[in-house]
Amino acid sequence: MAPKKNVAEEAFNTFKTEVERNNRYLVDQLLQKINKLEEKCSNMEEENTRKIGEIEENYDRTIELIEQELNEVKIKYDRVNRQPVHNYKPEPTHNTKISRPIFYGNNYDVHPKDFLY
Image (cartoon, rainbow, N blue to C red; front, side, top):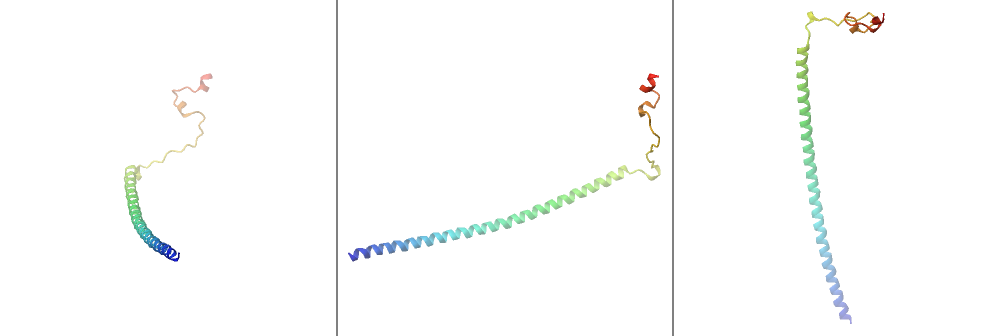
């Protein structure tokens, strides 16, 4: 009976070594895939930071162009709407107390108060 035990042990040992070899092979494959994915992620990270930098630069350039155009428009607007100093007339200030609305003061419209008397 001893030889049967040796044959079973040998078969078990060969099976065990084959399983360990397959296990190592699969672990190596998984490690390779993990390394590839880590490398891919780091490449994507670098690419995304580069793209973000480009977008920020484009945004800054666009903001500067818009501000420059706004300044040019303000300058043109100020030139067009500037009154000459010698023709400057300040708006009159009213110190008088108005007892009736202005549209009744032109003597064409009759104020309801005057209409009663």
